[in-house]
Length: 378
Image (spheres, rainbow, N blue to C red):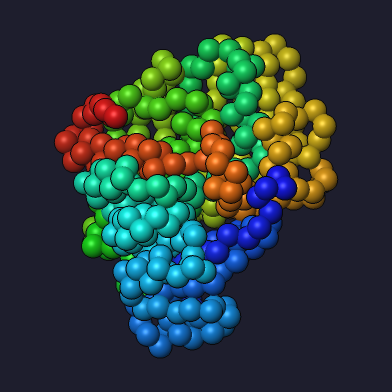
């Protein structure tokens, strides 16, 4: 951070009360580099739960209704400057709109919204706001992912031919949503998750990572979505063929029903000169393979890496940095952007989220129409 951006931003949070997973992750991320101070929250729509959660966190102000929070905080001289939205998908759009229209910057968990129509409405609403927006696709902020993106952009791989991405888990192999598991219940409910299940939850991450590192976007896709869980209304696995704007072709496999996989996000990109390979479960390594030469194992924290990687590394090589640090990188870069009136080319924006929702909607449409090729028109 620069001297001009050392003060803490006043942060609020909507969602993320007791028992929540992602809310705690966001709070860790906001605290790690000490650029935010959490002062207010609407942590639950249940008043007793909201109050208990606020007391545990030592919040100065607790709300039950996000609209009330947005209005009252915008009227205070010491009101929040940024809000973090960490609720189920169906609440993202109305909450983000409430804060944006009052000039409060928004950090929102992915996917952007529950439906494409909501995403388009949110995008239009944001055009009249002076506030800025960050979508937390945290995997794009790992140091070795930033290194991989820099290698693609500087031509080290040559002309990109193939982009292969997969995000594979096993936690929904059994019907956890029928056991009262909170995380499984809302993700399996179309009213809360939206038009997609696995695709919205982890497929959106996989696609954003492929586009971010590959420095491109898909122009058309063919999708085959599956719901293997008995009675499950939303997809729990996806196979998608992609044709990219830069001429490359690729495949996305996302699954939450693949036994033996915990959080196996992997990316492989191949050009006519070289290829790269990265695995989220070993995030500090990047394999770089030049045609006709031995493969190289590049490691986070070393002097041979570019500024793209070293600028988001905190500790020396050999010490692992991972999930929480990547989240914190987004929070820190957003704080820098807000406090110095600069723009980071690496941050996922509202436009990123809108394109991601178009990808999800196209995937659902393609699958429902017998694996039809569907264009992605921005």
